[in-house]
Image 1 (cartoon, one colour):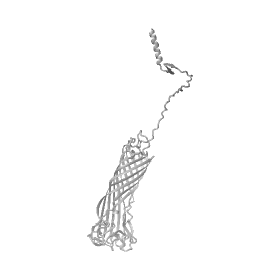
Image 2 (image 1 turned 90 degrees about the horizontal axis):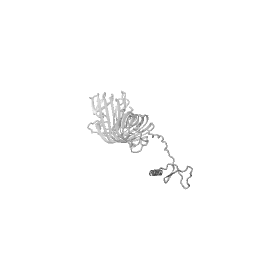
Image 3 (image 1 turned 180 degrees about the vertical axis):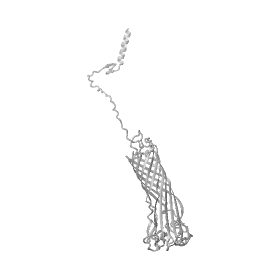
Length: 466
């Protein structure tokens, strides 16, 4: 019994010793509860009560504002939701995963460089000495065509382009082409039945060193008509790979800059044709292949100078677009360096019908004679730079309208007007009194002149993307 009582007291004592101090400090196992009003000793540190700090309530954060895509091909590309405003224009990050396809069509109103020539057609009074009819420098002689070049005026045209841009706009491929209408310029003149006014084609006679002319009409001698027609057509195409620079340098959110590399083709075909027909009047006479001919014979003389120039070559360039709200400006610079293939074809013929001799035909007109007739080709290295700028407005998320300007330059070409050589050895001229087929004349010389060409103008277009 005593043993049980002692065990009970021992257990109670151990429980009291191990109990946690819940209401105050413990001293040697005894719980001491300080009085509420008791003052702490002066030497003891004040007791600090640490209040529980609740975390501030989380306020809803606004999503970062992502600027609308802008740039050559970024008009309406959506950005992924997890991209920040700083990341969306860094192409190293997958913020613009969607590629697009686009197409554009433009109306062109362009001008080209005049085809330079010397005087081709003249007129003058009939009251001077017959040997001065239509001669350049003779009193009263006027140049009707040439001297200041052949102006083709404004060309209408069409340009179409299309392309595809891959994910993140890192790479793209684009291509297109343009076509200008075939335009003509020239003159058609004629005399009355009496041969008035004087109509002539001037040249320089190498045998005398003096200015001379081939008459189409002259009062009392010839009644005739003369037609000069020059035409030109210009077109081309290209295909390029594009690479956005925004993946290499940090770009502003409204600016896109691309570099491009590709291939370009240009084609310029031109022709200058001069034809005349003269009817001999009662007082008229002419020579044909060394034989004197009288009325009522009819003489026809024709010259044709044709050129065809083609450019094939690689090109490099850069393009940039800046967009502000719905307005944008786009610029492009390209430079092509490649092969120029030029073809020059010269043909001339003269025909005599009626009169005292049987109908006859001869090689050679006036500007094209046996010394320079034929077809020639030439290959040269050429350079083709181009500059373009467009200003436009975004009318719909998939449609934009714009107007622009383009300047294109092309060197190392040949043009018909430059091929005109007015220096004539009359010994090979079928209508000359000095005609001599065996003379071995070398003028006009068989040259292949080099020239340059430029085209420029405005455009009005629409572009869509899919």
